[in-house]
Length: 302
Image 1 (cartoon, rainbow, N blue to C red):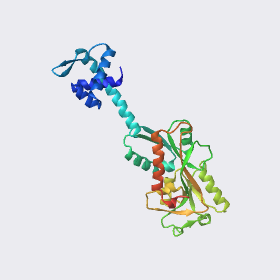
Image 2: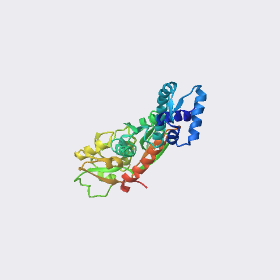
Image 3: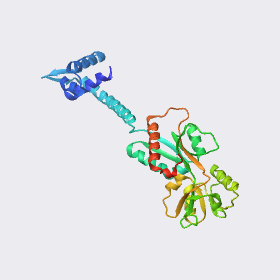
Image 4: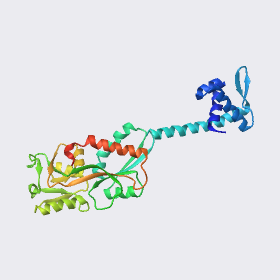
């Protein structure tokens, strides 16, 4: 027996004539007849009797039909699943992301992706860049997004965005009229910092030390968005990544360029060895497009 014989058998049961069965299968009538004859030869008993121009299924055929119907419905489900996978209507993605992207930008990017692929299941977890690398390398997620520079090795990566840190000032601050802030401008200012464990903190401290500038370091937080809220409340000024500045939705903070530039790279991590699935490839392409359309040129380093 083969699948085409079983499809012909079901079609004859439903259509009651070989002609209708052939039409349902988009084949010729002789071809449909040959399929039924071959099936009867394979199973060793007759399936139909011709009565008044119609094919009447034998009792044995009706018993067989129940099983054939269940089996073909299963095959059709498999075919539909394959079609959905091919057209990216089915699948799942596990994505790990650093907080700078994970608290605002990635939810927007994922929502835009799901508008095109509503049946795809996506899980987003937010961890430090170091933990994201570990998840991708360990095969515990499909894709990762990290912020560089970092002090630990990373697997295959595709750079999504190169940007500079910006100076966050409370509205009405004396430096608000300036388009560019330099370290000397921040002498004696209350300053909201990243913790020492974060590479950006070390870079920022080194720049101010090189310029001989003293700041009042009264607050620390590992996340840029809470840092912006501290600035909004007048707790100090800060240097934050461009994506967090882009995602800030309040009215109490202004962002200005800072020199010397502190560059930050946002990279998409790919599985280190396994090839990308069609769904992963499409999401990577979507992220390129989303970054290109959603991040203004003022926030980029060319």
